[in-house]
Length: 113
Image (cartoon, rainbow, N blue to C red; front, side):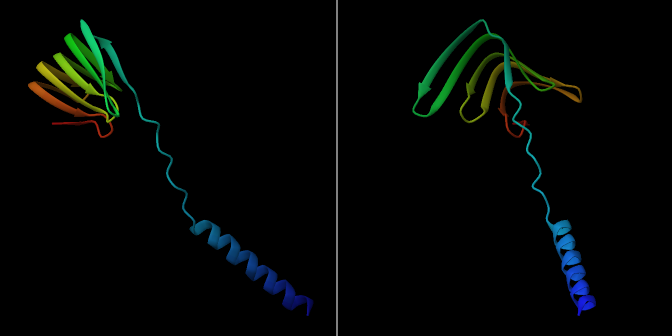
């Protein structure tokens, strides 16, 4: 009887250990890296409903991680993480450099359109 109970306990322990190894932890998400405003000759902050809009004019320079973004003007929709750069736009990061007249930048995905 004791041997039978010991085998059952061992079997339960093995099943418990196996089931624990099958559970996958959710990957931890990195906190979103902030965009830094390094320069703008003039800025204007507006609130429209639930959106915070920052208009930037003159020698605009922002940094997001290792990417530097430059332009003559920019409109930053802060609540949704969207930036529109206008005029002499330059985007530089360690891997590439892009020049354009207009660029839309998505903060969360770091996508440039």
